[in-house]
Image (tube, rainbow, N blue to C red):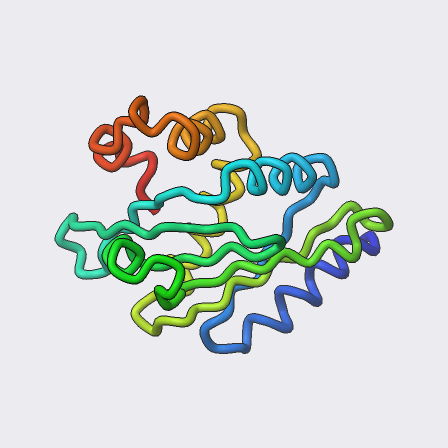
Length: 163
């Protein structure tokens, strides 16, 4: 096992015993740089989250990047309270090892106990997908800079977009 893999193992093992915390890793300095540049340019996005009741329902989370943090609240809270809405999830990116090990450590804190670790993991992966891949970022960019061309109903209805 190389040193970077050992760091990943320690990071995930350490957080596995912490309630309400999901630990992940982003490998690749360039991916992280692209994600942060895009997050600065387009800080807001929405994520449909499948309801845990199993009834096929979902609710919508709004994300907002603030530096190396990405905060999530419900669309209802965001519409009602704007910047004062309470976060349900907070993703923090730790890039101290990026130059030496090509790793960014990710911690997702669950602030609302209604969210499962699986939901936190799915949201984490969805954020990376939307801000790193060109196809995903096209949606984010349109949502932030050309909202009249962002078909929200089509986006929400597509099962591929549901976390």
